[in-house]
Length: 165
Image 1 (cartoon, rainbow, N blue to C red):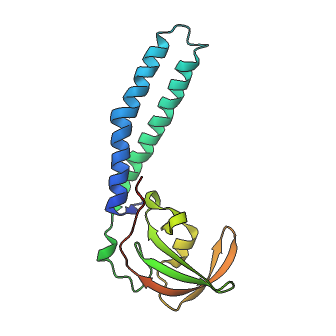
Image 2 (cartoon, one colour):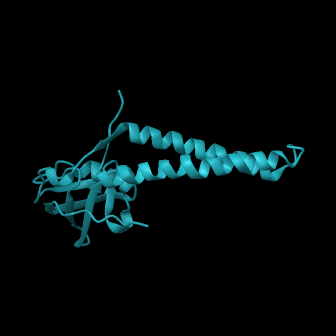
Image 3 (cartoon, rainbow, N blue to C red):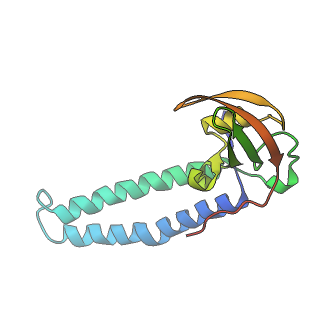
């Protein structure tokens, strides 16, 4: 069974734009570079040819990956969901019980995540353990850096701010 990939419209458009750029700009450029390198002669010792072929392989792998993600995409509007419990698009304020440090995370799609800005993938270890929690819940999160005890201080929806490059 094919697993759906939840994401916001922003994430879907970001992946679609990348696919468009790769297919219509990057791949044709690398095909041209392969042709030009092949015209230089002996392919065994032709570094330009081998580099271009390697780049073509990388591009084809990325196209395949993007097609898979876009094909499984399930566009979710977090504003339309209830956020009494942690769900996709929820912004969650946590308290690390040991350090008394407050942390704020928003749960987004994998292609939209940026942990340094508080956007974590719904597939991340912490997000998977947060789903369904509500304000006041305490839980021990099993994370790669060890077990951390948190209290959920707040669960809310707020407009998600994605960094755009």
